[in-house]
Amino acid sequence: MTVFVLVPEAHTGGWVWEDVAGLLTEAGAGVRPVTLTGMAGSGRPAGPGTDLETHVEDVLRVVDSLDTADVVLVGHGYGIHPVVAAADRRPGRVARVVHLDAGMPRDGDAPLQLVPDQELRARLTASVTTAAPGGDAGPVAPPPLGAWERWGSTAGVPAAALARLAADAAPQPIGTLTRPLRLTGAPAGLPTTGVLCTGNGSSIAMVEALVGMGHPELQVLTDPRVTFFELATGHWPMLSAPGELADVLLKAAAGDGHRIATTGELPAHLRPFLLDLPERPRERRERVDLHLPEPAAGGAPRPAVVLVHGGPVPAGARPAPRDWPAFVGYGRLAAAMGAVGAVVDHRLHSLGDFPRAAEDLVEAVELVRADPRVDADRVALWFFSAGGVLTADWLAAPPHWLRCVAATYPVLAPLPNWGLAESRFRPAAAVRGTGAPPVVLTRVGRERTEIAATVDEFLSAAKDAGADVEVIEVPDGTHGFETTDRGPAAREAVERAMRTVLAHLRR
Image (cartoon, rainbow, N blue to C red; front, side):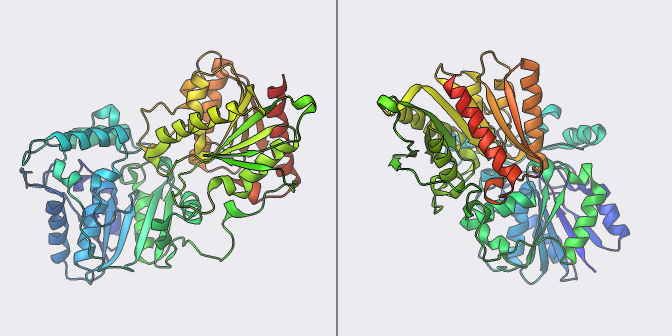
């Protein structure tokens, strides 16, 4: 008989699994919900030495008490850390590990590194750093009722369940978040399943895109023993969709699920641009490539279109974004239409890098505007994908020379699992101000649900503010359509977007 060992998120206990446990039991499976030391109902209060190792031992006690090798360890959020450590120490006792809306911790990682709320992570890191030698920084208080989004989207959680989540939560011992995870690699190749909650910002399509982008730590996900499922809910599916979660867990235990295949084909972002364009002179200057148009009569400077990629993109990715066919194509298209196409290669290598990417963009724009071939008073900024959240600074306080902001299949709000809910990177809030420049937004009809919701939020805010927004629709388009679709509708959308941007520059 399959036995599911269910290990919960931080601050919570085995009680969060009640509905799922009942459904799994009805299906004939064994279930062992775990309440970790220090959590309400564990019977083991946290002491000064309670840390991640304590919680690993909690899981090991449950595994060792079972008389079957068909054990499926399920880790939700923080719970994945003691789960993978337990699997590492009992490789012959565990049949599968399920990452339930959880990251992929590696040897030496502290759970604090995967805490989604970046502000909370920075504060806890500082408190540990400044603690007296041998001292205890103290437990981490659970969020109040209205702040559970800091640990992940609460989409779909009934009000009563959310109230219980807040009422029964317990302080998390700081050592459970700061002690590094220790893994030997013993269970390498152990069957693994990722359950992604799209309402929290994760999806199979997103994982496939990141794998194709070359993130080295994600290449293990192409192993045929790794499967994936999606749940259309937030970070707490045991509370918001217990039936769907129980069904997925049973299928995962049976080895079902989506597998990420390696076909040997070029990744989508490295396929040819949808328009065949003549080469133009290209100059590389620091983090910017300039695609240059024919000189204007009399040597007059040209307007510039600054192109900003999304990400995160691995630091060592080759080719780098400025050499991807789509951005080379857009740069050439701008040059062919009489503008300087400037492609920025900023350093958005992780979700914590948005401030650094924003600084890189400011420096790149200054470099472009200082070029004598550029009319410094006629510049447009064009953002793609996750680069879309970088529009917030420019919409909130647009300089006089910014004639237009463009965005193509953009992410226009931080996704819940990015941990940036309270950050400055919220374009919908920025566009509510006065004086926002015209916006040209290319929207694809087959966008990922979690991203489409951010576009809808932005358009609603822009409408309320009376902002000048032109939406160019690509009804059958997908994220990154310029290198996957050469049809007439896609080609016309790209050309129309560029014509519209240049029209704003020439007014």
